[in-house]
Length: 201
Image 1 (cartoon, rainbow, N blue to C red):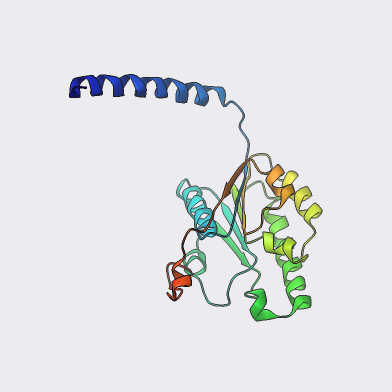
Image 2 (tube, rainbow, N blue to C red):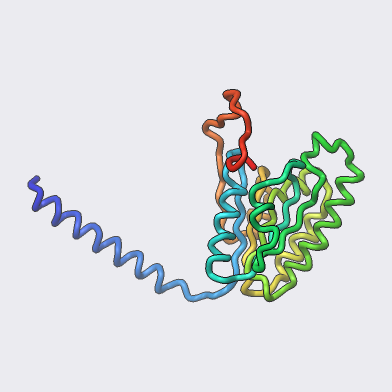
């Protein structure tokens, strides 16, 4: 096949793809907020959530972050968003469960930060809410899943929500509009590489 034939074949294929994409775009008529669920044992769930949140901030939107399980050290996102006028940021603050080792305290902190999340999820001025590492709350039975589902379902029509965590919770999979599973193929930590500022936190 000559270069001219390859170019002609490529153009026809791209024209066909363009038509299909434009038809799909034209068919999408509904305007409402969506729930995005990012789960799995691979690295990148929170990073993806924060990347989408930054996109919203770039469009001048108001956003909220609730982080449920994080280490006790200060993260880059915490420092960056601390005084940002478009961002409200709440952290459960107990650190990893294997460090806190205090179920009663963890449950109380989870309930406290969940109440703040509920306020965000009822606020029409907030375009996007990131509930980072929330699946641990259901794995450890710190929060009631049915209550969470009800709050998510009753949120303002145009509000978007991102849920992250390792577990594939069937009720959340069903409720979410967009679901992505992040699988681990390799991780530097498993080869003895220390967690580093700007990458893991």
